[in-house]
Image (cartoon, rainbow, N blue to C red):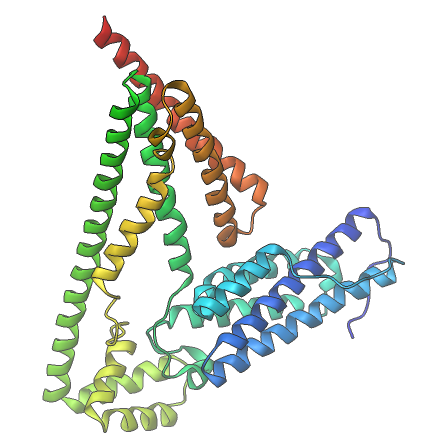
Length: 383
């Protein structure tokens, strides 16, 4: 048990203890979900240990509250933690690992300024968690680094925290761009049919452009990776001893002893397919099984996400006209913008009200600007 270092406790301290305890309860819940969803036993055990450590930290802050004479009751995970836990169970732990790493990084920095944690090892725990999660995140499709190499050897690329970010921002792009387009046309005083056609055209054009750009990006990456792997295969066939030495050096740089590194390199190079796979992951940072993912899947996902956001400001014009349709479009878009802002909090950890309101303000400001420009153009054309 950690010793108490606080001599006095005011309301600010009590609120800080409660916030710290809630954060630790949230982290423990998400790590437990990640452990349940992880199919690799070694990595699942890592997540279980992280959950246990965070639970100990939560109890530390509960003890601080008791010392201050506060009655301590059970605390449930916050809505954000429950959503992250659901994402981990539904899409796999890698979908939230980057988000959890950001929280650990912030936690280590925050605890460093709190006198109660002096001598407890809690700051070191949080920083260790940060480094461990960074290793797991960076090794999605690559070899592990440092002392966790043996535990993480053989991991394959999966959905990362960037997938969640791309989903939220993709829908936001479609929503804000098409809302601005629709409001610009509405400002020019065109009828509902013209606005509807323009909005649908903007949806298709924007979604198609996004999909094409995503396809080109992913396909170009795949072709580059294929060429790099082909070059590596040729080098392995022509000079296996040199490739074996490269692998040994890589593993030595990761923290293994020379004997361990050479033994591991010998074992890997003895099988050509395994050697090529390992060299691609370790030397090139490429997952040969995915090569950056499917270009068609990326394009389709980009198209759908953009279209989902872009359809929102257009829908009211199917049934309404005039200022009523404009008002309904703004209202529906405002609700959707707030939802996008709330989704962003899964990545940032900020207040839902703050992020949602900020997103609404930015989106509506863009719409107001284009509406004003459209009005000026409409007046000019009418004159």
